[in-house]
Image (cartoon, rainbow, N blue to C red):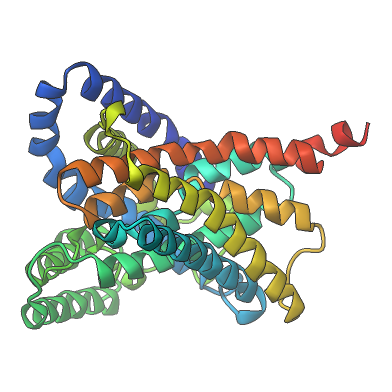
Length: 377
């Protein structure tokens, strides 16, 4: 279940992040070789399974009954997610150009990210678990994840492009996944160790990021005929291959994310600079502005939204979505080589946590969620 995975994974991720910050600032000479030694294993192999679970949630959301299964239900979240990416990207590019920082332009996607785990936690704190703004934010974040996977594959190659070789290997991977599905193979291991390994090799040899290896394989796994919903506890009981894959990898991915924080978040506090403030301004202003404007546009076009979601709820939810963290850090490492620019942009991704207290303050000021009665009194 998405809620169980997302809310559970946060503790080790946060612990790894804090440990990295302390280590990198107190003993940078020992942190740097540690980070370099594990970077490939964590970012290019371990994160395969994080993106696989993200892809699972995106795919299930497109099944009958899912929030992205039809334009009637998916229209507004998709539009808002697009606005939540275009807004910060445009703000980043505009500011980088105006400040004369062309070397930073490749980081335009970093502020587009939404960390679904921490955003969902803050949203549940502000609105409570039953408020319609919470599933709206989750649907938006799922769509954001889908777009982010496309951006990562299209704009951030991991090496020299060899698309012909990669395409041949990927065709073999997809053919194997199709054959496994055709034979109704119920175990997820052949999909992972067979088709997934071939897909990883295809992306690696093709020059694309191999962390996306399981993304095209996930839809081939036998799955439930319909989506139960992003917060339905019954999903934990589903016996299909895709849900068993998520249940088995839930704990290992938590450890992978702890390692991801430990390997990627070690930024010296003196490493902030123009890149830090570019990311921070772009995500804290561009993200809620883009989500707010496109949600308003969607309502004007009569796209469906729960009547219990007010304009103030959208403003707060858009600000909550500005917590970039995990995916923002990953985009930063994909966009920049080691050096001062990477440290600056990583610091901006970490500082995006400022969206959490900012969103709580906005909720209090606007009388949203748990602050509705307090503000009224």
